[in-house]
Image (cartoon, rainbow, N blue to C red):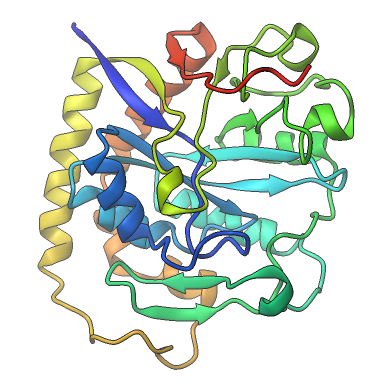
Amino acid sequence: MGVLRLRADLHNHSCLSPCGDLSMSPTLLAETAAARGLDLMALTDHNATLNCPAFAIACAGRGLIPLFGLELCSAEEVHLLALFPTPRKALEFGAIIHDLLPLLPWDPGSFGDQVVVDEEEGVLELHERWLGAALDAPLGDLAEMAHKAGAIVIPAHVDRGMFSVYSQLGFLPPGPYDAVESLGPPPLSLTLGLSAISGSDAHYPEHIGRRPTIIAMPEEGVGALRTALANFAAIVAGFGAKDEGGEPKGEFGGYAELLADPRLEAYPASEAEAFFEDVRRALRAGKLEPTHLAKPLV
């Protein structure tokens, strides 16, 4: 069995993240990532997974392998990536996390827009609860929740001067992590011996693909998922085009509505889950090459 070196980026935000650019639709993410030579991309909006279905469709139609997740903000204001193999699993976990958000209203003037869109960039909702808030759960509890839900768990930008284990705690506490993400080569106190990946943390189009990680993956699993995603794209196309326009389309049912979308049933779960576990094994085994462009902060 051969090995492929995938150019991967596991930390990216869409227009749903309040600190991101409004142009960052899932479709733009997929188009730009494919044009810049990425093979694998994860969507990780702040405390929410509502744009994951649109991201699945956008990636499948462009030959890009997607992962689905979110960037959690713990009670200590430490950021943590939780990644899932399918949009359904990401939505299910996102619905749980939404209940941990404080009841703070969204203020676009202070925090920026929070837009849920479909794969055609039609607006489904301007989300009304502030997604950038700290969740009502500490880092350890969130890591355990994500791990038990089957996620790949990665403390985000561990050596950054804000929203990191370095800035908030000074060290990485033990937890069920599969790797860490860092800006530069991190010290042992921030990795616990885990492999360090680089990620773009893209909030604007110019950020997409700026800090990828090369991950060595079994060729068989990659090929099987790519074939299955092409079939999924064809099935989705058969559902027909939606109404055009960028205005909100009536009352949006949130996670419940997205989970009821019949197109989710067509997503190739078995192939995606097998590939996902290959990614997990590669991360844990250190079969990767990060692009550490910044100097370490510690």
